Length: 321
Image (cartoon, rainbow, N blue to C red; front, side, top):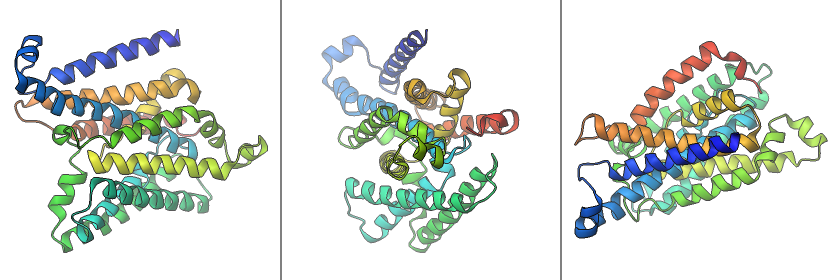
C-alpha cells in the first residue's frame, strides 16, 4: 500500500513539474515548441532549469530539516530555526564585502563553512542545557539566529549592502534561475540521495548518544556527517536561490504524523512532498499577479508559519522523539 502512495506521489510531482514548465508569461505548446526556436530557448534556458531548481532545493531542504530533527531529538527545529541559514547568510555577506568578484562556487563554499560552524555552535549550546523541553530547543535556535542576523545586518548597513543582502538571500525567488546558474543544486541532489542511503544511521543517532554507542554506532562520525550534510545543503541552496523558510520543519512533521517515524520508509515521501510544496508555492506566485511574480519563499513562509503554529498549539506530543 505504501508503495502505491509513493507511485501516486511521483505521478503528482511529475504533473506539477509539467505545470511549472508551461506556466509563465510566454505560452508554450507542442506546436510552438516544434516551430519556434525562441520558445525552445525559453523552455531549455529558463523553464527547465527553474523547475529542476525547485525540485532539488525543496527535497534537499526538507531532508536537511529531517536530519536536524533527528540529531537534536526535537521536531520543532530546522536550519532556519537553528542559526544555520543565518550563519550561511553571514558568510555570503563577508564574501560580498571582501571578495565581491568571487565565483558562485566560492560563495557556496564559504556559506557552507559558516553554516557548519553555526550549526555546530547550536549543537554545543544544546549540550550545555539541562532542561530540553519541546519548546526550549527552537527558542535557543531562534535566539542564536537572531544574534547572528543582527551582526549580519549591522555589517551590511555599515558597508551599504543591506539591499543587496536582502535581494540575494531573502528573496527566495526562482525567477532568476537560468541555465548555467543552477547546476550547483545537483550537488544537493546527491547529498539527498546520500542521506537516504545512510538514513538508518541518522535514526539510531537520533535515539541518543548512549543508545547509539551501545549498539556499536560511531556517534561522533554520524553527527559530523549529519552536520556536514545540513551545512552543505543550506549553503548551496542559499547561494543559488536564497532562503526557503519552514520547509525543513513542516514537511518532516506532516509526513511523520501521517506515516510514522520509520525514517528509512518515510524519507522518500519527505523528498517528494518537499519538492511538491515548493513547486506549488512557485506556481501560485507566478499566477496570482501575472505577469508579475510573488517569490516562492513569501508564500512558503505564510503556509509554514500557519502549520508551525498549529504544531505548537495542537501537536506538542510530536515534539519529542
